[in-house]
Length: 178
Image 1 (cartoon, helix red, strand yellow):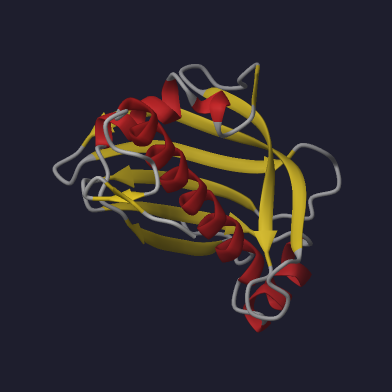
Image 2 (cartoon, one colour):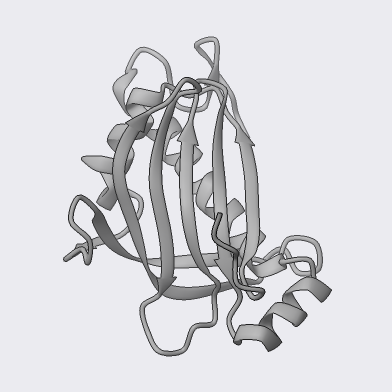
C-alpha cells in the first residue's frame, strides 16, 4: 500500500438524502452544466470537466459571508458497487492562486445518501497542512459540504420540474407558504 504524503488529509462527508440515484447520475453526466458550471476540455480520457465557482460558506460566525474560488471539477466514469453507484471526482483551483484545497476521491450515490470520500491537499503544502489541522479542515470540509448540498438541491429541482402535479414547495401535494 502506497503511503499518503503528510500534507494530504483524508476527507469523508455524508449527506443524507432520499434521492433517485439514476436521476442524480444524470445530473452528474448529461445535465451537469445546469448546476455545476461551464463544460471545458477534460484532461483525462473518460472524464468530464467543468469550470465552476466552489464556495465556502462561513456558517457559524458570519452566515452571509461566502468565499468563492474559480475551480475545475472533474467527474469520472460511473462504477456500479454493492452499495450503489460510485463516480471518481476531484477539484482544483483554475488559477495559480490555490486558495481552496485540491480534492481527489469518489462520490457514492445510494437511495439514502451522497457520500464523498477521498483526500485533499490544503493550499500551502506542509505549512498549509499544519494550519489545516489547527482549524480542523474547515475549508476542505466546508467546500465539500457545499458541493454535496448543491447536488441535493439540483436533484430536488430536477424532481420538481419533472413532477408538474406536485408544486416544488409542497409536502404531499399541499403547497407550503413562507
